[in-house]
Length: 179
Image 1: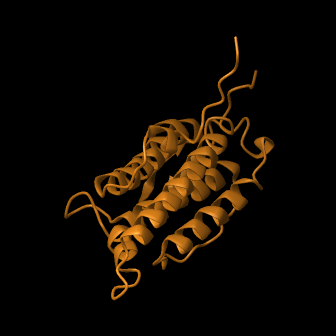
Image 2 (image 1 turned 30 degrees about the horizontal axis):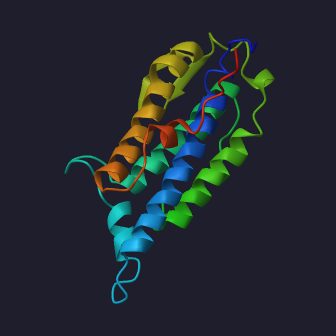
């Protein structure tokens, strides 16, 4: 049985979920390719990437970028290390998949030892300069809910557009055990 700590409740679940998001991107690309018209190359992919649920919400591309940013920046904050910078310039499914892969590669460099025992450490965010979270509160009340919010919103945009995805794609497999 795995011990619960800030590493186990953040990094592995975010890695698994980003893997599921990558699968959703594959299905989205396949659906766009199936609907592509010869006189409008990549138009359907671009439409999907820039679609949103409602007018005042970020489009799909930004949802994926923010989910990746949450994973890398949040883990780095708790571990007390610098996260890699990524430009927000993705315009294709392939570029979004590459961003997910870069994020996963960074998350693989973080060790449990960098995060375990840091529950009371102060975490500050640039948009709330006069406030802080404890690492525990940051991980459980802000980081993970915010991360899942953006992944679910991305999922919902793809699903709304008729791409054949379901809960199993989002969950990316479950570690069930035989009785």
